[in-house]
Each structure stands twice: as C-alpha cells, then as structure tokens.
Amino acid sequence: MTTLRQRLAADLAVRFGEPVAVPEGVSEEGLIALARLAGRASNRRFWPEPVDPALVRLVCAAALSAPSKSDLQQADIVLVTDPAKRAAIEAWLPGNPWVKRAPVLLVVCANNARQRAIHALRGHPFANDHLDAFFNATFDAGILLGALILAAEAVGLATCPISAIRDEAGKVSDLLALARHVFSCAGLALGWPDGRAPISPRLPLSLTLRENTHAGAEVAEAIAAYDVYRERLRPHPRQRDVGRFGEVHPYGWSEDKARQYASPQRVEFGAFIRERGFRLD
Image (cartoon, rainbow, N blue to C red; front, side, top):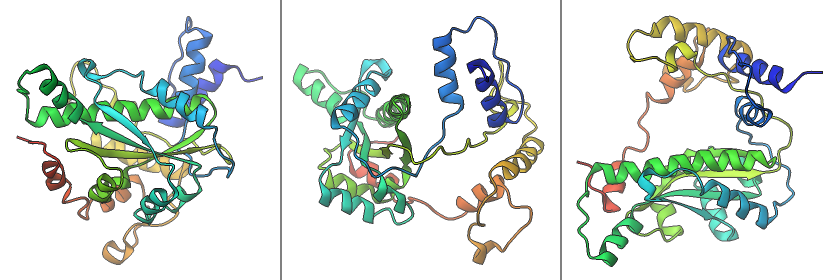
C-alpha cells in the first residue's frame, strides 16, 4: 500500500521532474495538506449536480480567513447565482465554454473602495493614492483566490480559475455593480469533479527556488529540458496560431507561451483601471 509520504514524494517528482525529499518529522496533518497541494490540478469537468449553498458559504468563509496585507482586507467574493447574469458572463467567455457546466461561479474582486470609505468615516486623509493602492488590493485578491482553491478542494470540489473574465472588465463591473476602486481580478468555477485532472508539470526548482540571489540560472538549458519533459507528460493537443507562426516540431510549453503573448491582450486594461479611479504612478 502506498503511504501518504510516498504519494507526496511521487506527485512532487511528477510535478518537477526531479526528486523532492520529504523529511522525517512532518506530521500526518502536514503530509495531508502538502499532498493535497502537490497533487492538485485545475479541473474543467464537473458533475451537473448542485453544490449545497451552505457548503459554498463555508468555503468562502474559510478562504476569507486568509492573510491580508496589513489587515486591510481589500478583497471580496461575488457569488453569481442570477441566471441572467451568469448567462451574460458565460457569453463573454467564448474561449471557456466549460464554464457553463460549472454548478458554481464566483468572481474574486480587489476592493480599495472600502479603505477609502474608512478614511472618510474617520476623517483622515488617504495619503497613498498611487500604484501601491492598486497593488495591495490586487495582492489581497490573489491571496484570496489561492485560498478559495485550497478550501474548495479540501472538501472534494474541483476548481478552475478564469482570468479571461478581465477581457470584459468593464462589462463585468457594470453587471455586478462594482463600486469605483473595485474591479474583478478572476473568476472561479467550482463543482463536484467528473474524474481527476492530471498533474501539470511545473518549471524546475533550479529556476523558481533560489537561495540568497536570483541570478545565475541557466534559463535556456532548463527551459529546453522542461519542454521535453512536459511534452512527454502533457503534450499540447494543438499548436497555437498556426496561420501566423506555422507548425514547428517539437512544439513545447515555451513555444506555446511565446505564441500566446506574441499577440496583444487586454491592452485597454490599464485605461480601465485608471477609469475605476486608481492612479498608477
């Protein structure tokens, strides 16, 4: 029988393409939490059965217990249950048709409006109307999104974040009546999983885990090796933008990501954020 420790080590080896030691002394509770992280995967396949609203609320409450920058608490969750609003958001996500099959749709928002309102209530100036105000709220929303994923998966739900919701940031803001200085960062689809999604390999630790300095990584060599490893485990089903770039073999992660960001994306997002009242200087 495979032990929890062995499963954790095996999943990490698949994730990074190299052994990762699991030292003695890690508690069973710790092994369970680490194994859940090491073996997790975004899942776009859901059973059609609904999720108990009380369970969704519990998951959200647990996630909202996550850390917040300076205890400012600048992130919110909007649960989209209205059929017309869900249909509108789904229509704005043509590249994500699987969202329609998710029983639950959440929208994670960065909220700097509440902090500004507190200043008005207490009669103190808001002296940080610059890039950090946007960054802090965004960072809180990112922490909340990660916590939501972990909380949902801890009770057996499948999750998949939806960054494409920012493609229609203005429409989403209007639809959800988001206040000035509030904006949607990501959506999150969740429901009961229809099968287990495979582990997605990550870049080698030699690139992403450094000690004392960020310099010195052999980026080209490491990425070339990662391309080969990832393509062996998770080959791309199709090549991106063949009409523009043609077909190449081998086609790996680095080629796919370079093609993805060779076309402009969300070029109006900065203007949208400024329209929401943020100064980015």
